[in-house]
Amino acid sequence: MEQTPPGFPGFLRDLSPEAISRLGDQGLREHLLAQARAAHARHAPLTFEKLPQLLADPDCVRYPVRLMFEVGPMAPHQFAEPGPDPQEPAGPARVLYVRPTLWDKPDLLPLAVAYMIPVINYGELIKDDHALLYGAALLGLTEEDYYEQLCAMADACGVAPSP
Image (cartoon, rainbow, N blue to C red; front, side, top):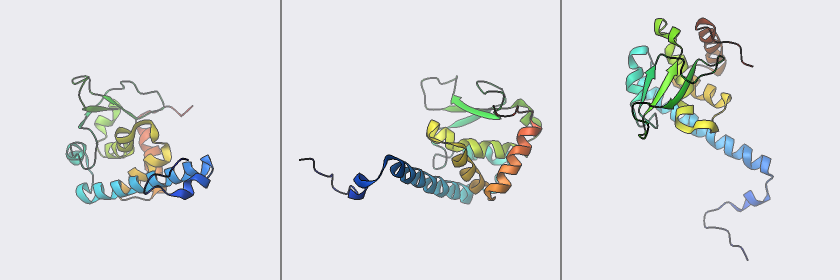
């Protein structure tokens, strides 16, 4: 007879896979929101000048990250894409490739970075709505305002429409 591990919520056995998935997503959203609020408390208002401190803060970003104003591996519809740091391919460091046109728009760069931090921290587990939730909370915006600003930023840096 199979025994339930101590502390395991028995009600999970009665849930459908979809319901379990929703619970997992709810937990992830709560975690991301808490992390974004903590990062906001430490680094707000987030500006171009403050980005290096945020990206080096292990309480906010899982890996040390440096910005590269290169297209790198990103698709035409992306404004940023994280990846392993080519200077330390075996190490934990990451780079965040951002559209080179953002170099001339430093006031827009925090929008892109805020969106990508959950992707840096949790990889493919993160969906667009997770990144919006995190970015909005980090920047102290509503999700709607953040989305509008992200769209304007993407247009300003020449991002192609999403396929």
